[in-house]
Length: 361
Image (cartoon, rainbow, N blue to C red; front, side, top):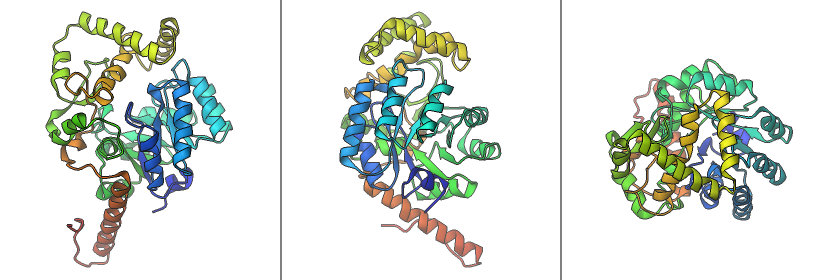
C-alpha cells in the first residue's frame, strides 16, 4: 500500500496518528510507528524539555520514523525546532501562524513540514510557505476544525495543490482509507480512532464518554476560545455555553496563567506571542488570549480523569466506534479491510458481482 506519503515518511501504510494534546504521548506514537503507521508527538502542550524526553522515549521504543507537533508561535518553538534537528525527527506538524524562518530551518535539515489545514486557502498558503504535504481536516474532525465537510474540502484542495494531501475528519477504517485514496488523497489521518485504543493514555472513565457518545452529541462550539471546535456535549460544555463573556475572560486569564507556568514561560512572553499572532491576521486578539482555555480544560478530562469537569474534543466518528483495540490490531484491521474493498472495486470494474462490505467475524 505505497503512496507518495509512505515514500515520503518511510512508513508502511498511509495512516497518520494525529497529535492530540495530552493524548499523543511517546507510547502511543511508538505503537503507531511499530504497527506501520506514522505518529506525531503532541508537543504543543509540552515544554521543550518534555518534548526532548518524549523524543528520547520514542526512540527507545521504536526504530521507525515519527514526527513532532507544536505551535510555531510558542515561546519555546525555536528550541523545539532545534531538538527536532538534533534528533533527526522525520517530520513536524503545525497549524496556525507558521513562521517562515523556522520552516526554512526545518527544511534545510531535511525535516518534512506537514501542517494541518481546514480550508482550501490555508492549504494553498501552507504550500507557498514550504509545506511538503498537507493534512486536510473536514468539519467532521475533532477539536479545532473548519466549516466544510471532508467530501467537499478534500477534492477542492486536491485541485489546488500538487503536494501529497492527507484526508482527515471522519476516518476510522479501511473503507474510509480506500475512499480517500480513490478521491486522490495519499493517505488518511486519524485522531479520535487512536484515542480509543488500548495504548491511549486517556483515563478509562473519560474513554467511556467517547464509547457512549452518539454522533449528534458531538457538536461544534465557538464558546471555548472563539474558534470552531468539535466536542462531545457534556456538563462542562453546557456550563460554558451559559457563561457570560466576562466569565469566559476570567477563565481565560486563569487558564493562561496555568498554561504559561506549565510551559515554563512568563506571562509577559506569552502576551508577546499573543500580540505577534494577532498581527498575522490568523487569529483575533481575543481569540489569541483565550487560546489557553482549550488545552487546560482538555487536560482536566484527558489527564486528570474528570470528563464532566473538562472538555472532550472529538470527531463525529466517535459516535460509530464501540471498541478499544490495540494500535497494532487497529492498523492491521484497517489494512485488511482496505484490501478487501480494493478487491471489491476491482471485481466491479471487471463486471463481476461483488460486495464492498468487509467480511464479518
